[in-house]
Image 1 (cartoon, helix red, strand yellow):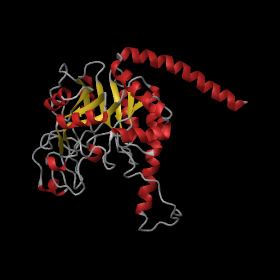
Image 2 (image 1 turned 135 degrees about the vertical axis):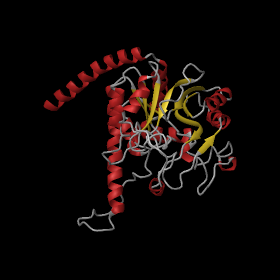
Image 3 (image 1 turned 180 degrees about the vertical axis):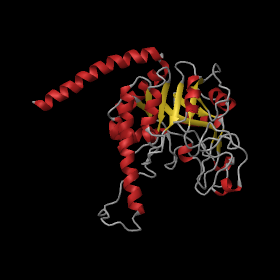
Amino acid sequence: MKFDLHLNVGKVYRTQKPGSVEMFYSGKEIADYCNYYGITHGVCIYDDYKNLKELIDNTDAKIYGVQWIVDKDQELDAGKEGWYGIKLHSHRGYRDATKYDWKEPTKKRGPLSVEDKMNGISPNSYGLNYGDKYVKEILADLPDGSLVYMHSQGWPAIDNRARPEHLFMLATDFFNLKFIMGHAGGYGAMLAALPGPHIPPHERKKGYDVYKTSIRNYGDSVVQFRASAHYANMVHNLFLDSSCYTPDKAIALRDTKKWCVGSDYPFGANKPRNSEGNDDANHWGVEDFGKNHVWNFDRQSELFANAMGKDVVEESFKQCFDYIEKPIDVLAQEQFEWMSDWKQVVKSEKDKYKE
């Protein structure tokens, strides 16, 4: 079994950041990727059902589709082949800013002002605020047992709702749904590199922003990975997508069985650097899959196997399959039994330290 917990098909939205571009990969392109790596199962985020169906029709892999939801009035594809739930994103998604206020998602607004445009606010530029009641309204309409894939993006800012604790709170509010935490608390090491071997600044001076940012982001990423594993252990309806690998993420995931490898293809490496467009010539294809610069499934699996053991990674595939396929009440019963054993383990640890 090879289970890729994070695939994307169709449109991948841009962000407000300069240089961010909208991407589009067809169902056939993602099917080529699945077939090349021998992926047997995959959770795939999709924008339009026709793109998911094209993927399903071109691969033997079992595809669990999660529909990208940006507005509450979107029609769900529930009941269609391959539909298993929804995907919510805090930092990407084209919510119409002429329809919703970008700071208060439930508040209606008029056309963008000149000042809005000068501040970088565009009609299609931002995602959901997980703390808004609007999100709960979306979740309340889902059938029991539906998958809810949610992006997580840790950084040391208290107003960032895309952190593990917020997803954990939603999971404990909707015990009837199966949550998947994208990236296990944080995307990866792009902004969370281990600080270099420098003496920490001991004076408050200009020019130390690089060190400050590095130590904050690295420290926060480690905390978020560990918190994600702990939260997943606490409830029956929260599972972790590992994309993308960092050593600290692998260390944290040793403490839970509720995780699986995700490649985030093609988002992880979707196009050559300095590309300004989204034409087919900029897309990775079969001829690129084996190259080091492609953030591929086998490479991700290998990195985690080197840190945790091949058997642990292979077991993660089965754990993911069980999480998605088992009825929600069965997962709840298994959680009850596991928690009973866990309490005994904690007691044994306490007794050991007393001795």
